[in-house]
Length: 517
Ligand code: GLN
Image 1 (tube, rainbow, N blue to C red):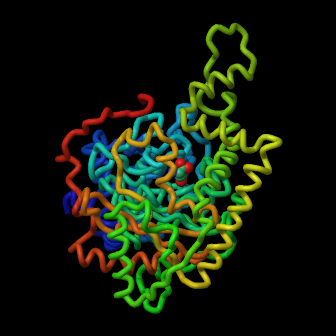
Image 2 (cartoon, rainbow, N blue to C red; image 1 turned 45 degrees about the vertical axis):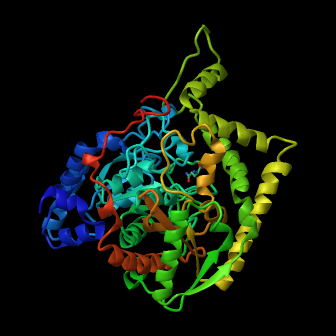
């Protein structure tokens, strides 16, 4: 098999080839590293490539397999990790200048589990600074490009993780989703992404944006691969006080059965129709019909408080972020900038100079917003009210899940937009997450899978499935059932319709739209 063939396979297929001894982990790790060398100067999905470390890990898995050891599922299939997860001995920047040069002394639990399962780590992927954004344009190291069109955004904040998977540089990747950063990038790149139930995957070692919303999860090309990866990284962790101790439901089993017969599927009135691009809505409607054909029953539900989800999120998230980012004080991590023209600066002056130089505009905007919302006299009016609306949203989900087993909507309101289109208008950028944010506020799981390409622009559209907390298995049952019907209709995976990255016209926009790397 040629190395190009190996990079087209799904993680599940690669795991089977490895188990059958038809390929070594070194061969397929090398194949993905070669692909990165060929295409990533066009995509810029990686901030750091870990070639040597990945090959060493691959050799170790090959050695163990040759010695007849029984290995975990997926052992030897390489993976990319969003640069927000602490990786021992590897740079972890969160897409920020303030963490440039920081090498964590420990692994995040998710990373430790990848290593324990024998997944070689190919590298760290690009992201909006501290996971704030929907386009990866807020990365301090320059944006990632969408493999479907180099002039367009790959989504955000985890644009790097979705782009490595969409451009066949990695079979799968880890992302994080605070308001949609796994699902929205999946939607605009024609890939699959899951935000697990809050507490279902450990947050230990995930550099916090908003602790009550953050959740790491899989970025893949198929629903089955997402279930496999979710099982590898999920489950209780004593190092995370919000980690759920119950075992995960059978995710891979649900994906393999792909059974939706008799399932009640709820269409959320507030998350469809007006405000959604025509082609996105059209592909959504067709997908719903596929699920009906597969035996599901459709009900319409209404969750009126969802209209306030964005406003609620943009009070809670900045409040938590302003507190979480206070630790970047110029003393403990990464960058330290000495203020100019001051002979003997105080700690405060060094901190101010460092934060001024180290944080980008979006991070500063949110720190200011959050500090304001939490200040005495305003706390009840802003943060307190937001918490109350958050409760209403969670209650409306609970009521909706009495009528339906899962809820569905388009994942993002539009297909991938062009670089620069929304950079001057934070509100327009925030609106990309209108359909994904409610799940984070309520702590429930969500999955996005490709529903096709929009007829008007030929770009991927996403279908979102939401389930009650700890019913993540339903995401995979519905996702796999829909995926089977859609891929049969398309005659193969959606990504087969994507142009070859190497033959795409050169981008017309500059390589970086924020600060230069
Ligand atoms: N785009 C959203 C934001 O800017 C979501 C980010 C995320 O999920 N990390 O906050």
